[in-house]
Every structure is written in C-alpha cells, then in structure tokens.
Image (cartoon, rainbow, N blue to C red):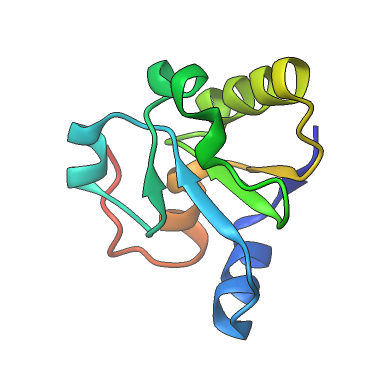
Length: 105
C-alpha cells in the first residue's frame, strides 16, 4: 500500500496539485476536526466506490491511518484501484506536524 506523509500532502495542497482528498471518518469526527476533502465514512465505502477517482491521485485519511488503510485495501482488491495513497498517521499527524489548531480527539 502506498503511503504519503502529512508534509507531502501539505506540499500537494500548497502547489495546487490536482488530487482528490477523501476522509473516511464518521460525520461527528469530521465536525470536531477536518483538513478538507470529501467525507465518505468507512462503512459507506463499498456503496460509494464510484466517488473515488481512478484518473488522479487519491489521498485517503482518517484519525490515525488505520481505517483509511482498510478502505484502500478494499478498493484495491475489490475495484482494482492503483492510485490510492494512505495518509500516514492521519489527522493526528496533521495536528502534530502541520497545524496544531486541528483538534486532537
């Protein structure tokens, strides 16, 4: 599974790179802390696989990187995706390394 660091994601955002950012946490978690992107909770990924782009890089994230890894594993195995990147450390790493104003929970 391909991973991307929070620093690499920040560089992609700052440079205006064309990519898709997907958050697989639950809506209540998204309300507490978010870094942008589309919310597709992990439990709904199978029904929303068509919302993940196959044409550009897709960065998938969650709180720590575990749920996003599960989502990526499913999408790669069941739908043949090869353009998915797991955000290493998730939103916790984003808060630690990029933006401390993003609340940890």
